[in-house]
Amino acid sequence: MAYAYVLLDADDTLFDFVKAERHCIHGVLERCGAASPQAEQLFVSINQGLWRRLERGEVSAERLRVLRFEELFAKLGVSLSPQEGAALYLQFLAESCFLLPEALGVVQTLARRRIPVAVVTNGFSYVQHRRLQLSGLLPYLNAVVVSQDLGLQKPDPALVDLALDRLGCRDRTKALLVGDSLSSDMAAANNAGVCGVWYNPRRKPRPQGQPFYEITRLSTLLHLVNHP
Image (cartoon, rainbow, N blue to C red; front, side):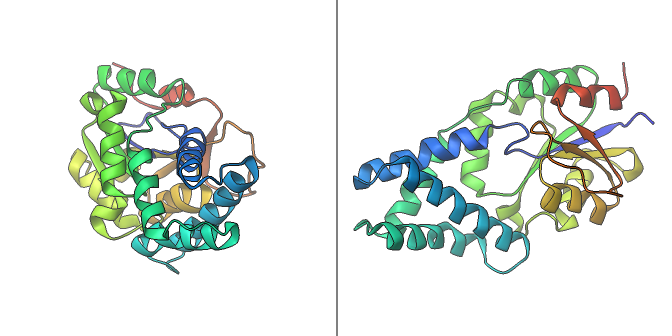
């Protein structure tokens, strides 16, 4: 089946979030005089754990924003306040636009084929909108849905529903949701009744019995959508 609507996750699907995250936390810790590979890896571990809790509804996005620095600074003995660390990190992140190699070309090709495209992303509104502005992607997108704007997170299907509505999609069997996360992207696709495409460039083990496509290069997506 050739699909006619595409929903794309942002971080680790279009953007190199690993690179951005390390760049930003290095900047924060450098300000504190505490920069080290070990401290940066500690932040990554704390942050990933909190985002998993966010997806499960155990913590709010606003609480996560500061809590990760409360935990980090407590373990490192940093004197900077968690609120200052949180603000500084988001300031760095909003200006950290590192596109993955195939991202722009794939989105441009979808636009040439007149495939309506939306970005559907968890994250903080200002950060995600600013990075999309810097990326060069916006002229080729038909809609952007950011979780903080709705007060919800993927895998809540409401984000997918809103994106489909903005694209004018009335038949969700013709839509794809592409993303790197099983717990947010593929779960959101399943919850919303659209086809999931798991972007898995690191070739993680595929869970058995999961009803979604798997791709290791973003450009493979182009074989699944309508041609001109």
